[in-house]
Image (cartoon, rainbow, N blue to C red):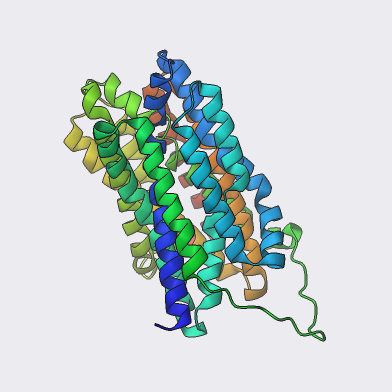
Length: 395
């Protein structure tokens, strides 16, 4: 096997294992807080939201630091560092005795996290130019399939082994990913010519002049705000509307898996859809579909209906998100695209951080209100994109 194919296999498999290992346990954090002695549903929702949100918040703050260190010391060591820290932190999660300890470990986890974007860069750098798009695509697929399979496997583990033991399984999965990167990936040494011209620095002020770029950032943030809102409340909501307590982990895992799997299909199908529809039409339409799905979620529907709604919800969000990134790549030059995507990733991470916190506080008042807030937010996103890109639609 050639070096780049071995690197591709190592980084893709490690990414899949890392994302799956995370979702083996985190969707069931509300149930874990209950085992730690928090029995008030409102308090559980708040603790879950804060704990799920603190990691991406710290990750967003640390991302520029780790990016500079990756440029200086290599990307492989940065990804290995991140995965190795997850082994320790997930293992410690199995032995906590109080909610604040979960929150503290999640904050520390955010400090060392951020291997996902670096893994994409590793795949792109190791592949030949004609295989670069395929290499990136495989890693993106792994980032979707991991969360798609993780929750349903985690739900089964929670029922058979218990939540504490599931954290140990997650740590073992991260250890396997760590070894894959450390042993399987061979990083090439990059040499910069002394007489090479310095790379011009791209500023956010310059990107603001790019058509619709600020709109794209706001749209990515809004979609992510809704996408991750189910984490703090879905298991509690299923129990509230009448599902048996012993079935909740598995049923919640199935819904999380279905949503993530449908989103992955949406990511892949957006390219075909954009050949027939404009972004200014497609993104508002998909936001509308997801808003309707959120409204159905707020009703005490049978599980079969919730499953169908989860498909529509994930598919619409996946199509809308990839369409926005595709539109951004079309309006930015190759020289500015990397920095532009960095800012879009920042918007994504901020949404990832804010979403569970907001959902947790809203859920502490009413679980159903979270879905109503999601529907309202998606309606606003649809209106914002439709109005902001009205000129493009006319053309």
